Image 1 (cartoon, rainbow, N blue to C red):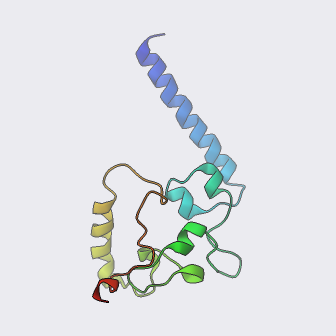
Image 2 (cartoon, rainbow, N blue to C red):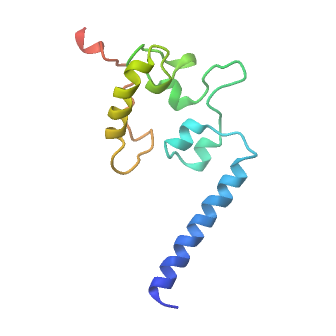
Length: 124
């Protein structure tokens, strides 16, 4: 087997492993927020985003402070899900978020979540 064949085999095995993990995840509860932020498997399978009553239980999301409305804790959300966000300003958000996602993904524990600050905090 050549080196190229081994690289192709390795790539194939990685894709199969990811597929098997995704199929297994279909039957378990997990936190989509943490999974999408590339947290470890152990982290995102240890909890859900919200409980049955709609209260945020994800420990990472609970610490996040929305820069638009300052919501946090039980009603924490990302900018995209902010109730103050209108369809009119959604286009500008998409261009801003798209620009910030260029480069390698980082886990939310590596990102500055803006905890304890919002866009008005600099005025104080």
